[in-house]
Length: 494
Image (cartoon, rainbow, N blue to C red; front, side, top):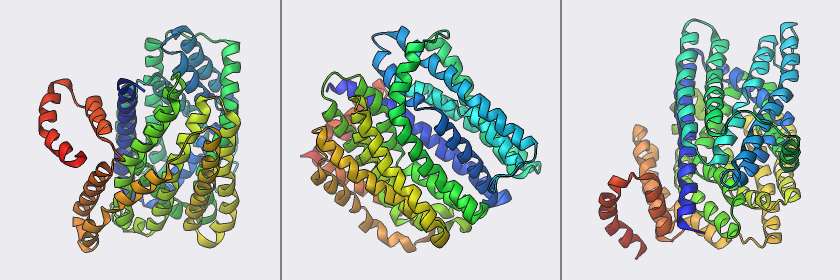
């Protein structure tokens, strides 16, 4: 694997992570202000409504966005015409697939129907959000082309629109309706920018029946596990909403969002690894392992610091959220395990081993669905989080068995070393548990010590750090940064 090739993965992953980070920062500001004005219940209504829309879109999409990433990743360089057909076929097909149920739900909303805790107004917004979920197609396009900086721009503009619109409508007294209108603005902006970029980068619409068959053929094996996985994720919110009400749902949703932020860099690398692996002729196993190792290397230090200060982090949104600290830790553990499973899934998918992809997804999601109904009535939102973790454990177990069929070695010795090295950051930061607002300093110390420890034991190798520098540092600053960092790197890696 040529270093230059992996640099493109790191750079594209960085933009994806920055997009995720932008979402998290603006999401934090959005929910902070929403919570200050209206409390967790408004967050509960918005998260439950958006989760229902995402659930429906995942059931209907037949895995086409995932298939599009594979085929565009495979053809974008050597056959741009085919890449164009795969994109436009995906977009038009999904628009038509979403349109009819969206209109049906809209009709139910206007006729006053109620479903579970979803009233008529909620159903109307579910209908609108279902169509807006086409933004997922544009996100897949940016990932497949490995041109993720425009996606970051779209995310930034969309979040600015979300924040300004939502807060303005809340101050006008529209309550959760105002909040969800603001929430929708992000998707609308991404759709608009993505459509413009598609015309410029890929050309005018051109569809093909054979391309649709290819998309469905590649998508359905991932659609079933993906659908079940989304069921497992979004039903967590929906179960909380149905059993516990809007207030507890709002707290649980914030815990999920915080966990997503923490594992964002590792998840971003796994997103980019799929088109990257699909485009490789050989060296896929080495590339998949390196992607996993680097992703965990940059994820674990932040995760360890959050394990130490979960209540403080959630408390930034208000005292009422601090009680969800255990939910955050359980979901965070689950998402770290998913990163490992994702490396195996991507490798299986790049080799067209669709049945293994399906089985890994089912191994994750079916236990979650079973345990949600058992644990939620007794343990509340903590039961939902525990079920979420149990599914990740069973999924990792199956992924490890699937990796042996690929002759892809998950080096558990290195993974254990990564975990133990990152945990070294706990000790110097532990006194800050009782230091009030100085916990932020403790978190920074924890992250720094963990990162240095991971570098010292070569979980993060010197070539990884230098590759990261080449990927993100502007050329004119590289000589100066090299001179400044060379003594430190020599001391660590000597």
